[in-house]
Image (cartoon, rainbow, N blue to C red; front, side, top):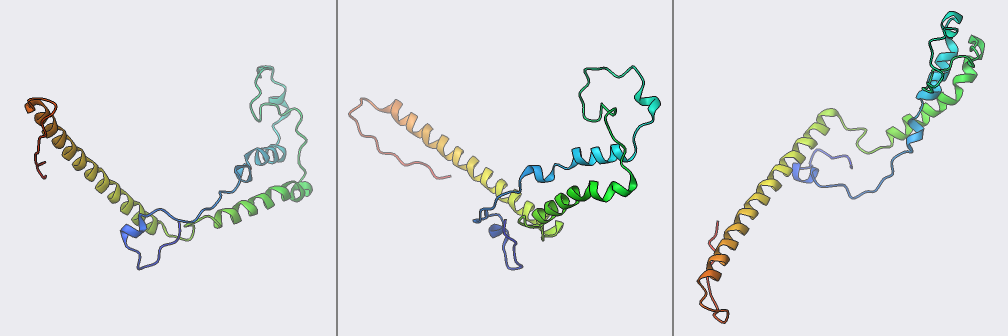
Length: 161
């Protein structure tokens, strides 16, 4: 959506945007596995927990196997997080490029209210149209019943509502 200026009316705010944009790739925001790996290496579990036999062998959840984790020394931490830091910067830049990121919460709430009001008006118009269509069908049905034969032309007025 494009940012609205102060002169935008609620009806204009409710119209869909004309511009096309693409969302950033989802894997750009997938940092949890890398973060989990780094955190597990920073503070490895004590050997007594690792050697407990009550871990099932068929459990393949992330973080279930701490046996192969090599502890991360403090001096090696900057190199370990470098890739994740650049990924976070790219993700933050991608989020800033999304539409309406510069709008305040209040502006977005007003836009939502305008869209909800438009939706309510559309529902009411649809209901009124349905009532008019039902009345017209009833008039047509009544006219068909009163018709003496198929060759007779029946003229009638549809009542306005």
